Length: 137
Image 1: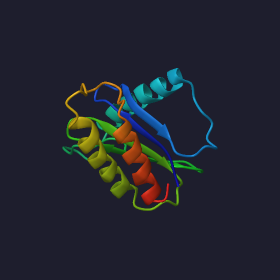
Image 2: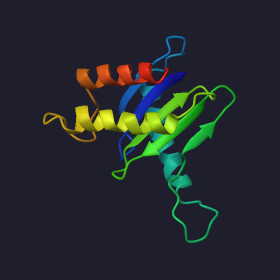
Image 3: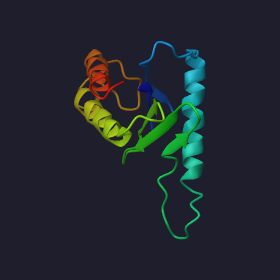
């Protein structure tokens, strides 16, 4: 089961947040913004502390807890897609890539969208919910 989706800008701002499980505790708007900024900072630090010499690290990709896993996909432009899911859910990498495809089709191709700003697109919302239902969210 997929619990939540977050999209974070390359500067660490929260661009999009959606919960897919009604049983989740909801955070305040400010707490979601703090989460995005904190994750952005942790991701930046983890990309620099690779234990392998002369290698480039992509940063934090999976954070595992007892009751969930947080997965991160960072695009070449620095936008981060986070999915919080049940630890037993399979193929999250594929879901992240398909989420990026939906983002590309319904957000980035929208001539009225300003990059790095919050996403306010009904078509994007509808297609994200459809995608999550298809993959068992």
